Length: 368
Length: 197
Image 1 (cartoon, rainbow over the protein chains, first blue to last red):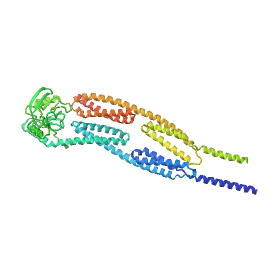
Image 2 (cartoon, chains in turn yellow, blue):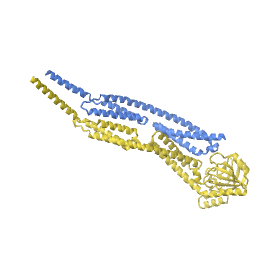
Image 3 (tube, chains in turn orange, green):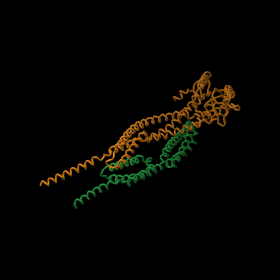
């Protein structure tokens, strides 16, 4: 009986020893950082979802590189004998990846929302700018390159709006910047031309006031042409009686310099003749060039501002066949035939015709 | 003695059995990687970016599983193998879906190109009528320039289409179509104004 007990004790002891050995063997196997890797992978996926690859690309790239390094190191360690494996570096890379992913998400959320706000503001601003350009310069004789730039700017803005609505803010921003460059530079150029043109405003105002005063004083008709608004006003005894639309010379900005420049002259003139049945139906011939025009023409020629062989030109009329809504004449003022008939009826030889750049100052025009 | 020998053999067989379960499913891993490369080549990242990212993420998760098993004394790659097989099917599906999506975008570009050409032709006809009006045609010069810009945009979109970059072509042509439609409305309004007089 004693022998049986002895054997049993030996067997139990051996089994316990074996179990202890197995336990020690298993427990000493290094634990792989599976949870950290899983966290890093999820964080990286979240970073991608929040578009960190776009809005915080640097952090996203770092996070991804750290994750890849963790995996590579893990694979390397797993190739070693099971008890020689060390996962410290794997864990370190995984933690770094998590940190960078989180930073990436934060930065991306911040920058994408601020991007969104900024882009929306820019889109609104540029649409306002287009409205201004349309309002002030649609009939302003801009150079073709400026018109092309405006047109390209509008198309870029449209493309940017499509990208913006799709949530693609980076390409939207790129196109908006291009649209902004094109539209702003075109507007600035056109505005500076307009500003330059309006340095003559005091003179125009003086002429217009004088024309209205004379009309009142002499109880007569007086015709006033506002080039910028394309309006032809008829005053009687200082009171506005008619207001008609008109078309001008293609190159209407500024005073007429010489023959063939397609500009409509500015100044105080008088009707010197009336014709019916001309190429443009009814026509009222003005006394352009007057004495002042001649003096200025000769002065500019002497200064070399216009070519020596240039001629001053003549035959400036108020005539019919207008109402096209575009500036197409060689320098004349064209009215719709029906409206021209009204002017033709009331005007006579000697009726004053005052042509000004604008009857409103630039501020009034820009305030619309 | 005979029993002891038999027990020893059984233990060895057990160990052999357990370790035989621990073979990395390399063929399946390679197959999925090849399928992901194919998806990238057909521009799944451009046409189906969310689905493509999901496939890549699933692969990362499976590879992490594989490494977990490799870290163990008794490896078990069965579940990973099953996941890889499922992912392979998913990725092959993605390749096919990308082709379908690409075709859809291509068709949309073609339709939009046809539409815009019709609008451009109509605009050209309307433009000829518009100057006869009065205030309605005030923007003609700018419209003419814009029509030229739209023509250029159509050429660019056509070039992108010919290159096979349908998404770029679509973005460009959509913007051009919106502008062309805007001009069409402006011209029609200008003509209508004249008719009302």
